[in-house]
Image (cartoon, rainbow over all chains, first blue to last red; front, side, top):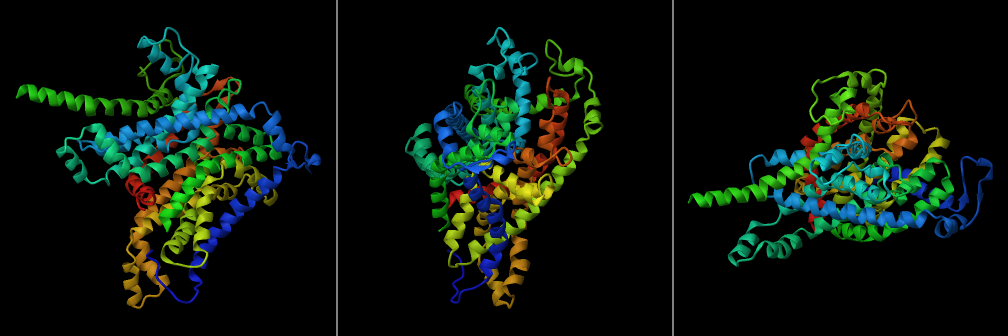
Length: 295
Length: 280
């Protein structure tokens, strides 16, 4: 800890923190409490006169009667697992490539980051255009390559819609992984690889014994951040399929978003609280590790 | 000897050139297709077989975009929200990050945990109460309301990011200034801030980008007059399908400014993002 030791209690740090703290209390902590409160209410803006406390009814209905909740929960797990999994795998491969020195590396690196700065709405809609059943370029390419006979309307088929949305979230996330892991890779000292080379280690031995252990902190934080973001993500799915066809791409966050949009706020809050609990499972190790680093 | 060169050329090709080409094709092709669609005539957008390179370029879509669709209005809305979000987050987060990394005070740990824990609340959880609070306060559909909604994720994240930057600024720098008779405030402004400015710019670019691209909250907290770009793009989904020509033109225009900003900021940004993760 580099902080300057001082004897008397000082007011500066609290003054410096005050603006951020006031805003956070106003836009995060009060709203979270309000959301928890709302989740125990019947609160539907289409029926403003019927607002009333109904205890756990929203929760009970969600967990036992809502035929969409558990399927959405399952899809969320698939969406996060495969989405983040492939982002990591491909992002790591890209980072390994970019970690070698070659001419034009800076340009390649900059160009490969563009998907990350693209708005989610645009990602959803552009991929929807690429996947189009009649004029989509993906179908056209697959037919030209002889993989398909006829075009498939990827996003309007139950069995292809979710994998198709996962491909686009993978596309979005590769750059972030590549960027973070590349920075970590560049911190691994070349001496270790030299020593391994002298000992005759092969590529995989070096990967598992040197590379992965050295970047494990960055890897961990990046994975957790991405899991949180992907789980939260609404814009891609909402603009690609709006959760369809027949709920085939409806994840929890999309479901809550749509319920909130029709202004059934009590019910949506209860579902959002349940989603937060799911998120906690992921976030607690993240918080612990960040916190440990801050000590 | 010659065999050796052939072998190494092969190795470079399969180990480097080929994978890079595949990656770049995958990552950039959607942008190519978006741009090409935006300059095609309608006949060529819906042509069979597909047209990969237009025979005649047309800027008519862009005229339509800035003409009757009034895209400039949405760009202006986005710009206002993004700039305000950036300035507000930078200001309060720099102060907070400075307090966390340069002072040791009672409650430091608890407060830090409070900030870090903000990252984990789902956007959709905050969206609902914020909607009803802003309705009561009359902030709904105003740029200010959206800016406040964005600080829910920009402030915690930038506190984390800026702390990463500050850790790399040696404390001896300010100490020397204090010894020379500067007080804490002028040491902060005259010594500390100039050193940190490039990093703050990088963090600012990130905040700007987030606000410029955000859709979920914007779709709840804006109306047709205060719409930002993402919501405007979403409004191109109609009953009969999407207006692909307009979407692709609007998308091209929306992506360019953030791309340019990002290219300048990327190096420092990554340094800040990894600083928190690499150490410890």
